[in-house]
Image 1 (cartoon, rainbow, N blue to C red):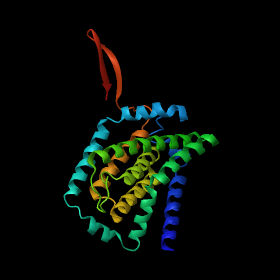
Image 2 (image 1 turned 120 degrees about the vertical axis):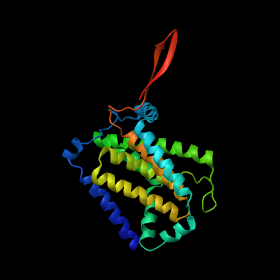
Image 3 (image 1 turned 90 degrees about the vertical axis):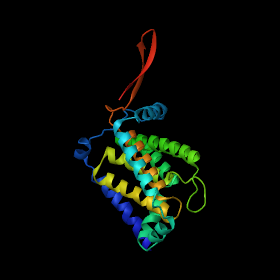
Image 4 (image 1 turned 45 degrees about the vertical axis):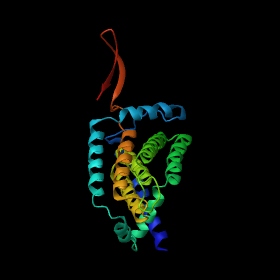
Length: 252
């Protein structure tokens, strides 16, 4: 009963956040959708552009901060103690919902669904949002999967591939997109759901705190990058004449 009420409350909060974005709010956004088209045929190029746009000073600072925080908490990790603390009434229910929210089986249909419904209904704003969410999620999971195989850290429960947390990365990927596009209620709720996902992974002893911090950092950077303004493409690479040959030049 308590779990059902909690889920209803969280869904209502998310809905309220979306409703709080009226036409005036949307028109004053600091970040507009970074892509003028959101068709399936545009997806590969847009995804490639996302990867090229990642190396920016802002993203470097986010990455440095996240790496430092992950290394710091790794020195004091106590997965058993954290799991016991989180496994309490109310906290446990919030954490359980976070586990559901960060699951790829929810995140992927959500992103693709928003994209599809927006396209079919002619709602360009919704289609662009789903387009950003889908690209962000794919790039996030690709990055996380590569890191999991590279580090192959044993989870607190004895399983493989602990670092970084994929659930947390997915949740913060969504939070990065939503917060950059809309901010306000929607951004705050999305970030809150990302935090709940991290708590859920630690409560179930699926991840260490450092895994969660690293996953949140990765998802946040990639999500915000996917929803970057059209005028801010990060690094632009091109071939330019240099002496008797060509050189690769980057715009930062």
